[in-house]
Image (cartoon, rainbow, N blue to C red; front, side):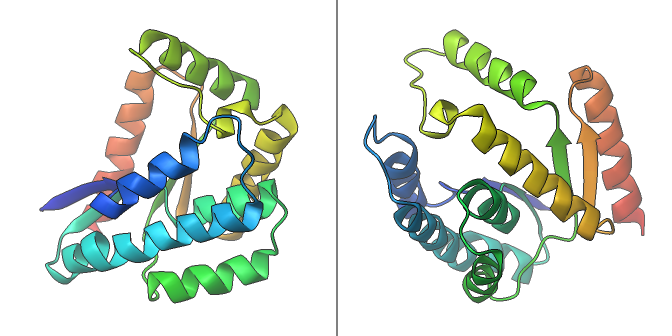
Length: 182
């Protein structure tokens, strides 16, 4: 079955510019509402340009991050009203919602160490704004994702991400094959 792989932010030409603005502002503070509206602008363009056309063509869309990330980061992490975020996501996404969401879960400290290790191995990698956030922010985001997974167990599949990559790959492969066969 044909598949489109994409990401948010940055899945379109405009999205790449928005991603750069969101992640690479140096030490400059970004107001939570500004951050939110940049993510929503990226999503609106992404839905219009990539996701909706792919779905209309009968393709599977594999997206790294989507509306749940807005709820987790801007809602649980930044404290923006969750109901407002849900309404904005619904409007921007035109009702398009993932059929299956993989949540890669690990302790916050493990995730931050992996990110730091990846950055140190990359050429010219710069720490982004989220990597500079305090551990408490990342804990709130993690708890937000886990709460969403508990509230929608038919859509979320929680992966214990502290295991070896090969095990995780096999688990995901099995879940996807079962979903496609259904």
